[in-house]
Length: 70
Image 1 (cartoon, rainbow, N blue to C red):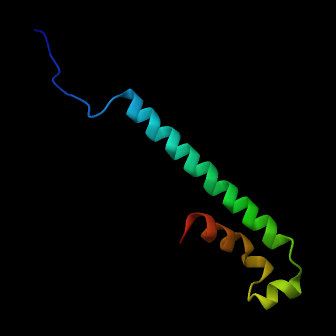
Image 2: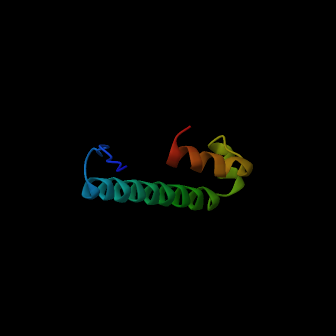
């Protein structure tokens, strides 16, 4: 007995590929924001960080929030 699938996909391969490319670009951009922010914060001395109300221990968390949100 033959089986015929009537399942249809919405969109096409080009749309799927465009979504994947957009997702990768967004991820790379966010990673760039994270690394740039972290590098800039790490370049500050402890007094400058204290003036901003930040501690050196929280820099990764702050950079993560800047790039990815809460």
